[in-house]
Length: 200
Image (tube, helix red, strand yellow):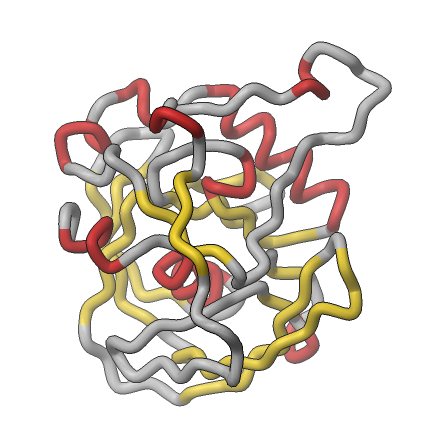
């Protein structure tokens, strides 16, 4: 999760060895599936009971996700960005005042980042990073469900990224700055290298 607040922004993150990112001193994460049986979208009890809070499953760095859905074929299908995923991301973003929501946090089993864009959410599917000289910043990591869970990581301030837009289904390339750049880098550490090899 990336909380609103500029320099005091908070991320939940784990290890990344490529492109100059630096890991904190923490145990190696456990590899896990986003959903059982690699279902595209998980079941949320809160969607059947309005009195329940959204079932946001915040990434805390103890897990790194793998998915059989990490392929260009799956990511390019319109069904890979269901409307329910956008609804869930909006709910999690609003409840925790987060400018960054990862697909796994809303039970969507493809690698995607939801970032706030003009008071709405933009969905970046399978973002690919390109080499870029950039200043690095230390980012404080926390779990919104556990304020005592804090880590610090180093991320590039600016990134060049190519991604599939979740709304238009068009391939886009942009240069991102914080907080979007941090969100994309967080997504890159949240899924296994084997997943990224399947789509980069």
